[in-house]
Length: 355
Image: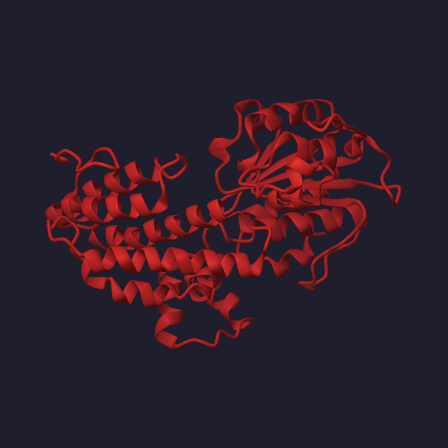
């Protein structure tokens, strides 16, 4: 019954879990598809929906499934809201008003009352599927409002939360869903994926992007699209300077330029994209780039491994500040200094020694 999951490369464990649920005819009504970004979670969710709605055995076509009873909710959907205040602001989360309009019903901030689409009869008379992409962006109010639907699900309604950060979902949400874990692709699976692609880039850049991705096809595409190999090459000395106490001002400029270019690319692709969200994503890519050096340092050499652990602590500390109001430029300046000096502390001040 899961023949069509061949369009999902790898993820044998996830496909088996979903296949068993469909095969036994006891499909749970609420799911969490969780795992690293760019490994096929949302694609799998749509293929799952194809089977639940159309009742067909999946083919090998990779064409995206579209149906009146498939509802995919993304943060950018707020731009089409009838709520003017919701539509005009770029969304960095999935607010409760959007969820009320698109799924659960109720009164929204513009004093309108919406029917609960989740509880309505499906268009085709069969099942309905709601996929919430980047479900970790549901704010706490939205998650609590979703609980009623998860606790008392309408017959024939299925909800799939797709997320790379299931730890940001409330325990009450998690307890009402069946989780399916997705993992990075191995080298053979990545090679299978590459066979279907035709990247117009240097082989060295493609090979580097594959190494950077750690098994995420989505990250390979992101790396090539944003010219990340060029940044890596231009700041190579800075990356290798971890713990050296040597300053690299040019690296700070290069990282800032990359973030600005990254944001322009994202806004060109999607004018509804939040600039703030794009800034955060760009900075997370920079952190992931430095994380490659940490992976390279880890090993049998105790001194190098100790250096890697200290560097990882610095990156984790800075990553924790990304969702604050501190500007990305300030965080990059802090990152440059702290990467070389391996120190903790306030991002806007010269931090105290890590020791």
